[in-house]
Length: 144
Image 1 (tube, helix red, strand yellow):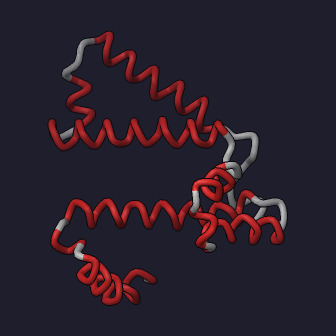
Image 2 (cartoon, helix red, strand yellow):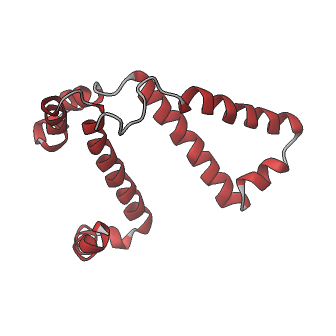
Image 3 (cartoon, one colour):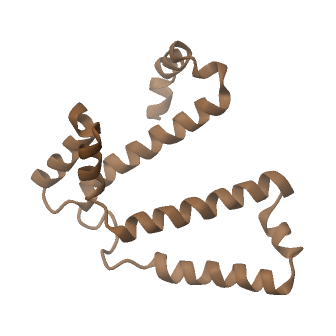
């Protein structure tokens, strides 16, 4: 894929910056870059026209947009609900990853919990699926 074609250049850049000496930092850097690329690509699916899409995309590539005022403008293209959903998903995913690293399997860990805790977790997952799984905006690629 695309990653295979750029792997050598990415490894050189990681070595030049020094990320290859700090694997944890290198891993978080790759996560942050992937997140930025996903956010950048989402602009094209959320915009109502190509002119609006390029106007929003410009916020990601112009140096002046990385100033605090530019960041506020960039965040404004996302609704409060988008940011809340991101925060909830971020916390839940990291919680499950922590449980998996500490206990082997999140589902095995949950099975060892009391009935009340297990019901609460399952209710949270079901309610989250209903609240965050349905969007009035429709399928993200529908307007592309």
